[in-house]
Image (cartoon, rainbow, N blue to C red; front, side, top):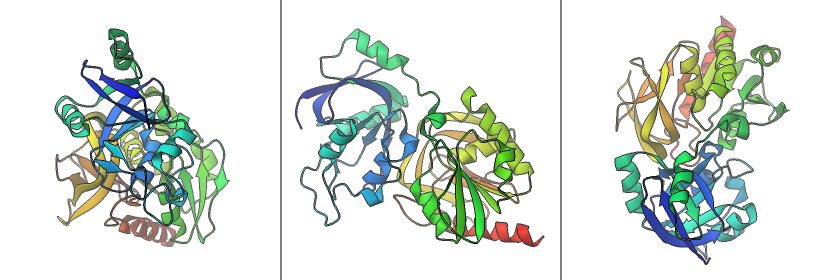
Length: 352
């Protein structure tokens, strides 16, 4: 870990730190996550496509790098920002440290800056872009940061072909918008034969499988990006087919947009494993894992965020969706029962 690195924000504020992992210049959207653990699941979550991940917890990497904990095979984030990376992790499962891992994957890391000061700037001003560079930043660097946009995010992280990933008695078609392994594992644990489909698969091709249920995965980007119009149209057809549909994160947002709701960018998003949500029917509060920067505007929420009152879920009767991650990788398992609810609705649908 060496070499001076600078982070310039689109508003001109500059931080000086040091590189770890790969070195070079790169622009991206800076977002912060509040989890104290789960950094491996975070860095391998496709939902961070196009973004700089900023950890609020000061020491990251304590238990090393454990490939079996990864949520996907690749890192889709553009850069990784921490206060202090651990160089000597202590864990019998660890295979290397974060510095070596990021070098291997060609991902730029930045450390040694005041990460909490940076987080405060984002909380007060909203999510903003930045550029990491090896030279003292210039006006050109700032303009490059400001011009950066996350585009075609779902298409960039989705799988390219149909794949059967588990055996079971209930057939589930999983539309991959940037799926996390925790989702497929939760379905497999419930005796599901899971088939993953690329993001742009036609609804008719999915229904040819004759699935008992349809899962819409999590994923990155703006759900209302024009590039997603075909997805939204396909989701509406799937919901009208009579098959039970369960959407998570951007899958939730696509279901809402397909049904006429609108989305809006949050000031700084919800990211971390300690986000409280309330069931609007029972009043019970759950702690959840989340990673999203957009909300759905509705008065018909099945769950709401306790901190800001935003929509965290919608129930459509046979189908339903949630904004948070019930597979909770990493995070608490408070809402894993939603996968059981999915199976219950599949079974109820089959018996009608």
